[in-house]
Image (cartoon, rainbow, N blue to C red; front, top):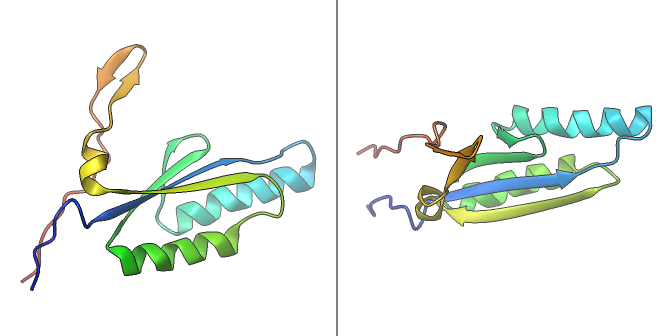
Length: 110
């Protein structure tokens, strides 16, 4: 059994800019946000959602679900990065460095 490590554990970051000029567009944008939340994503910023997805097979499965939920219009970027890279995120709130509080704790089941 291989040990879990921060270089093999993956995150997905979904960033989007969706049109909201019409009622239909607002409904589609809100629907996409709700779909991401239903998939277990957490809002990092208004149009930026992150999800820990473990290894590569799970990342591919989640990515497929996100692709199926994409609205017809707008721009969506999906970034994959490792847990080790996530550890190096620097966050500022009101010009003050803050800790990232939503990072899940990892554990190994034997």
